[in-house]
Length: 174
Image (cartoon, rainbow, N blue to C red; front, side):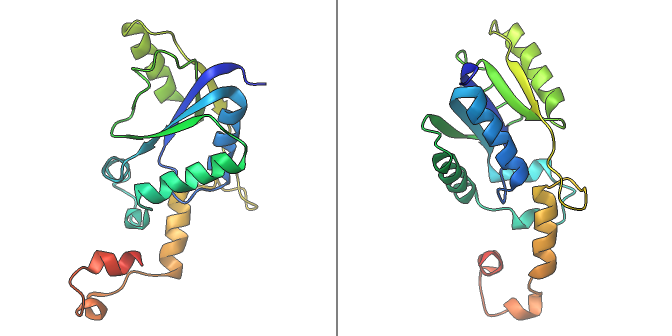
């Protein structure tokens, strides 16, 4: 039985993997209603400037649909997925939110959210920290690693091979 009525969380959710699923499972268990902030492509890319393979990030509509399908498959009936353009998204303006699900890496952001919510005269959120998920080699599963692996399997097309198309990005995404 869920602990709170509304739980929030945020992320990019690129190439949905076991780490994301652990967060989502925690959120489904934690709250009756799950509100998820999903980063827009421009915001996500601004956060990952050092990621050489950020161009392999899935479009937001693909990420949203994958999230929606996963939540439904897990029996989650009350959820909302909202595009966010900044680190705090709707967390500072959701009066009904009672809990937040984060990773060890994003825990400091949840602490900041609670400080800012107090300043905005909103209740602090119960913070549920979900540990990282590791692969069989003991390495943290991440979207960055998945994109890196995809780049090795399907390397970018060189300029010589794309002379016949006007939109090189369109060809690259196929």
